[in-house]
Length: 409
Ligand code: FAD
Image (cartoon, rainbow, N blue to C red; front, side):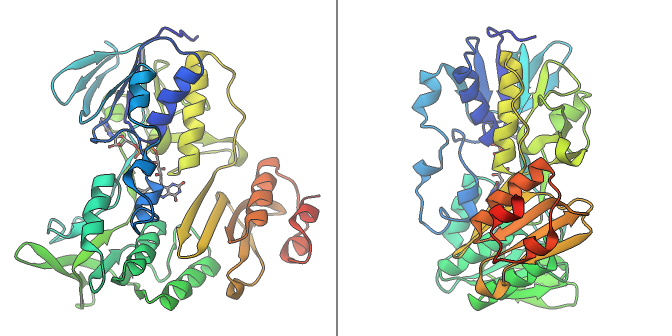
């Protein structure tokens, strides 16, 4: 049941929340829309924070999803610098950090995720940083430059992007990774090796299998990262990029179902019909894989904003999408479609040494996921093949002389 006059309160003014606010108006919602955000900024894009923006190739205005004036023009009551601290579902009320309260008819949790901190000695030293917000990015940019030594803790996508941007800014960069290969949780060995070699070619140092047990400092500022084997890696700044934790406490404390993320259905609705959850905070169904999952990507934030906007305004649910995401490092564009669940075979198409190839993850003869480096046709066609669950001829897939169109035929 929808009510175009309902008061919709959105908690979190990020990619998902900002997109939803705009979509609600676009879909004809006439009721009040209130968007509460604890950052000082209107909704902005985070991906450039580790890429173009960090390297100085994009300005602050280009990060914004919409110009600030849009929210007033669209009659969206955007309230920055305010945090929602308590949710009372029985009274349909949210308490904010200034003590005020907001009543809602429909509530949307779009609170995203936060960078995971390392509970180790020295983690509170100045110069030990994270990269989640524009404020974090400003602080990091001020520390990275020619001759500066940057230690990156964590060899995942954000860590590697920071490493690439750090090199572009002239810093000395070393990446410290606990696993014996990069991207261990998310990518194949082919891709891990490829990225290590590419970064090494650009002057990044690696310590793999390196367990970080503390930070050393002088006068309250970090001077080195201490490893379990006793070595200290000297640095002027350290970025910790070891993953993110969903901001799902408002939900769990109010008794909503959570599972490291707020559990929602395909309309982005929680176990309470008046409450939705979208974006990085949501633990959502993924029908093509027949399972629930929490995703951290812009396409997911956009898809779920659309699901919630349709449900709130009484439109039919949008068609399901095949998840995808990307990473930019140096001149490499990595595009990933799907997730490598229950994979029993890997097919590599093209030669990694050429800097243009794709890794296909198969379950039987069905495609689960593709990682494409500088290979848009493999990504685009792969994404379609994941979505339509087509059975594939693996020999054709592995042969770059057979076009992707023919593979898909
Ligand atoms: P967010 O954009 O994080 O927004 C949540 C907002 O809610 C934040 O402003 C938060 O401060 C606020 N908030 C939290 N709790 C409260 C509260 N109680 N009260 C009020 N406000 C609250 N994705 C890709 O697809 N490709 C990429 O290349 C890519 N690169 C990335 C690079 C970086 C450095 C980062 C940090 C992320 C990157 N991502 C990338 C992930 C992508 O940015 C996120 O998936 C996306 O921002 C999720 O949107 P969201 O609205 O769920 O969360």
